[in-house]
Amino acid sequence: MNQSLVSIQIIPKTKQGEDVIPYVDAAIDVIEKSGVTYEVHPLETTMEGELSELLAVIERMNARMLELGSESIISQVKILHTEGGASMDKLTEKYR
Figure 1 (tube, rainbow, N blue to C red):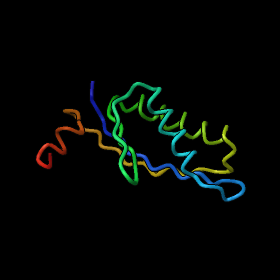
Figure 2 (cartoon, one colour):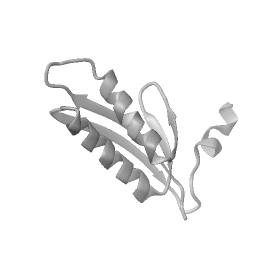
Figure 3 (cartoon, rainbow, N blue to C red):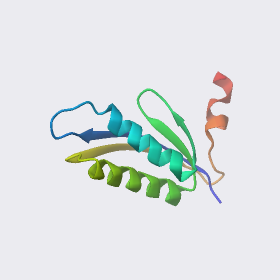
């Protein structure tokens, strides 16, 4: 059971050029409802868990953007997957 870290920045394109913050809030709501451990940062959100589960969350986030009327979505994703597992706490403990 390897823990992975996945950071995502979701950038929806809106039809009328409206503010994307409500879309981003809806994407974060998808993460919240998934039950995975996560942290919101100014430019991206980092999730922790099984890689396949985290990728499924990203798929649901993109689907939600389409449901809300986004014409297209760019999802910038960073993945840390190691044999021994990864955690946000381990990677940032020296800064806390």
